[in-house]
Image 1: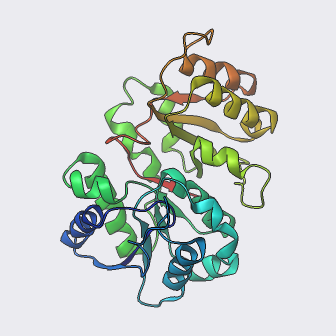
Image 2 (image 1 turned 90 degrees about the vertical axis):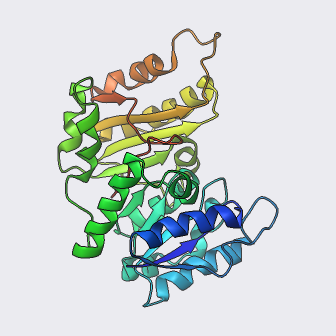
Image 3 (image 1 turned 60 degrees about the horizontal axis):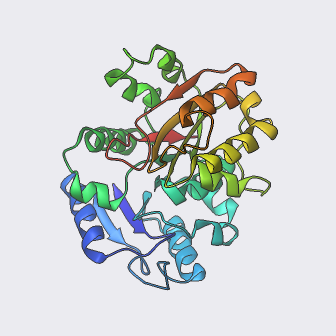
Length: 284
């Protein structure tokens, strides 16, 4: 498969990208680097125009089957309206990544094109044989062969922990997943790029956020009626979100309390997010 490596958000060191590309090539893929993928413009991988142009070029290029982001950080919100929705819809090329790439997953979802919330270059380079990476390789190989992601894939990671999480059985149903990084989702609310949550399974994760900020973002979802629309709430890793002694309850208990009026399954600790255990999730 022909994969184009793009940097829609933060800048990244070339050695990290090269290591990740080497893993993808070892899987038998033809991997090329976007023009501005290794650029640096402050904290960003190039200007907004440069980053957007790389994505637009990859979508238009008949020799590209799939786009893969180098890293997250911040920057995708700057370029959402520079990527034509019709082009995403017509190209039907998935994008792979997580964290700040959540904003692009939402754009792809709006265009009706599935994408993949999954590890990026650092993980691919440093953890080429990890079970998360092996699962990712299987998903990409399936896509290459069939032109679509495997049905029921989002229940795959249940195999390793469903004995302790019987409520996670709903993940094996053929229900579309939407979501990603909670902070990015919060920034999308009220914009034309927010997800359609109706009847979906919502998954969230975050990194280095205070529990009171997570409370605020979850309350926002509640007040918007999102938690009444979704079939279930899946909470992945909240990495570096240390417990706050001034909050009256623990983080996970607080999330369950916020979701309780909606009477939906709440699955905590799913292997999704900013840790080595970051299993791929098909979005849309």
